[in-house]
Image 1 (spheres, helix red, strand yellow):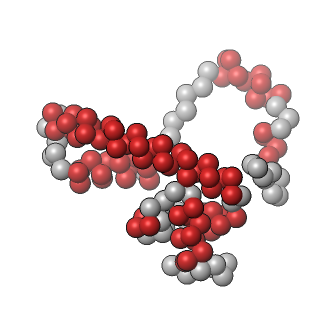
Image 2: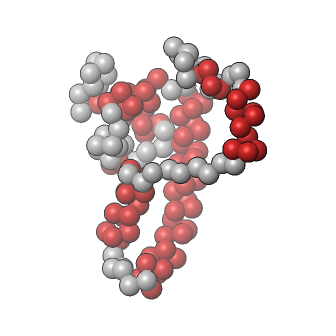
Length: 132
């Protein structure tokens, strides 16, 4: 996949691999769902940020492996096809298309949000602060 900024696909794949993505899904698995600029932003992450992503992905992969047999049984018990394809399609939909809903009690946090002087202004900064 050519990159508009002049990066090579190899640069992107190397950065994604450092973040814990598997070789076969490093670029092909994510490029249909992310804009080129989102993919390219991975190249600009600090080493500690890539390590954090690698850590989280490894933990998620391990938990997924433990939960999958139980989930496959549950899917079968509910009458759905017991093949991985149906469940995989559901996983992809959740990852790529499902809306994220965060419930908040505004009566408890509205004052803090209104008086905040830091976070509401970070989106207007030209360059966000580095995490590390």
